[in-house]
Length: 246
View 1 (cartoon, rainbow, N blue to C red):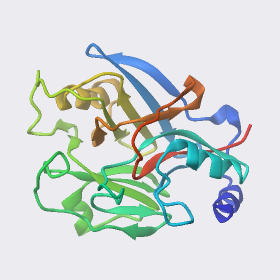
View 2: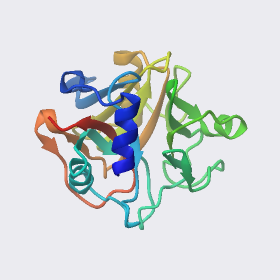
View 3: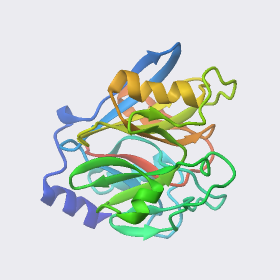
């Protein structure tokens, strides 16, 4: 963790508190959401899975405490993709350039296997959501990456299996990116929402052309500026920003 702090400071990636990526409460199509915005030039957006002892971080509080011991803190964060019962990521995962898990390209059960699915990539040039088979053919340089599914938006189009008015409504979270890759929007619904309406949030309110579903039902958010840090079952990957302690 100390190496992380040194690298961030050396790269000038830890910005003053005033530059903190903000979270806000909004409403879309009758459903309330909290949306947190990360920018390429703002506080670092990254993924975490395991603590130095090899066990998954599991919750926001444990990760935040470890960062604070190094003079940092967790900015906003949410669960960063689907995971197995032992909290190993389902599919491809990369953290600080090191990869874990295999890229899953076959159709399968559950939301993850509802093709097309995709990979959220954080690289030096910004953010991208990439369809998994395209990622397999020519993977970009991702410092951090998480595979999940289904894709919510595919080059501006909704996933072909989404049904308007579907009664399958859950608390859901996901990520969309701006067409130029400089901005990522991490959203969580505050009550149950179907896939169709969730996807239109990124398309209609933020102009995203590509967006990825991260998970549902287990979705949780850490947003200190809103006085919120959700608790619940232990998580696998955590996606969030790193901030200096104020």
